[in-house]
Image 1 (tube, one colour):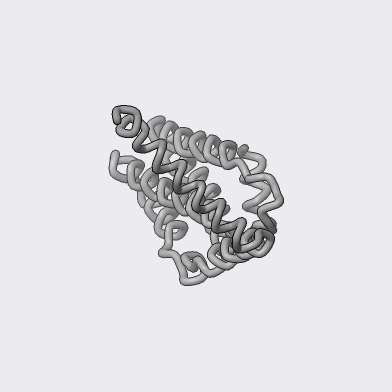
Image 2 (cartoon, helix red, strand yellow; image 1 turned 45 degrees about the horizontal axis):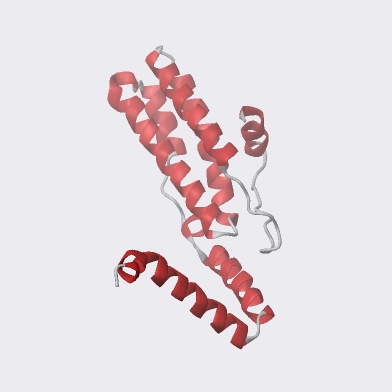
Length: 169
């Protein structure tokens, strides 16, 4: 995890190469676990009196997230990176709030945790990708097949939700 974050952080930008619904779904479990280790390690270092080193670790993860979110091609990817960035801010706040905020730590946090810019918060790319994937799916189905499959799905949901009522009649 840490080597991957360090390597990603060495790049100026980090692209998301997802291209279609034919690809297997990306598992974000490793990313989540890596982020959790960074958060825990940062807090541990701060508790051990090494708050500046802890915040440096946190800023590595934060920097990678800031490089990734402008290029997130799916809504899930965008949401996961935003959640990680949000948690990074919470952990930084925890470090400072627990009395471990030296002037050096505060300067590092102020330098790293700047407000998002328009490019980072834009959802244009994920919405476009989601639209194109849905459009291709719908185009591949005939209208009749698509409507029938939607209707059948709705019926199954209704019966699953109301099975106990139907069985008691």
